[in-house]
Length: 100
Image 1: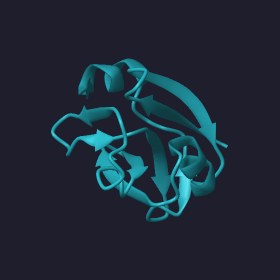
Image 2: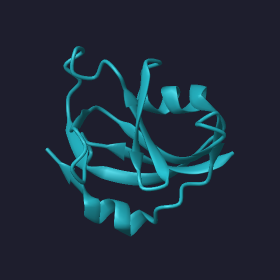
Image 3: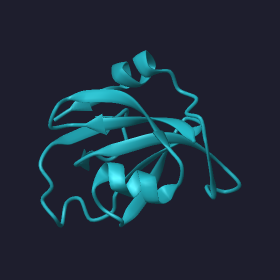
């Protein structure tokens, strides 16, 4: 299990969770079409089709493209094949996340 953060724009929360694999990330987000983007040494996983689905709620980390729906930030290794504990601390992530 890897420590991660679940970002929920509808609730405007960022909460610690544990994920075992990409299937667990998909379950937390609610969709299996995963896309990722870098957040320092971690990866943000989100629904690749979030805007096509018109998923409610949006958030943006730093200057990344805004994401609709939930996202998961977790560490990765082996070119993204292995999940590791998230490296960014919760307060830093909160300060860098804007809910839209």
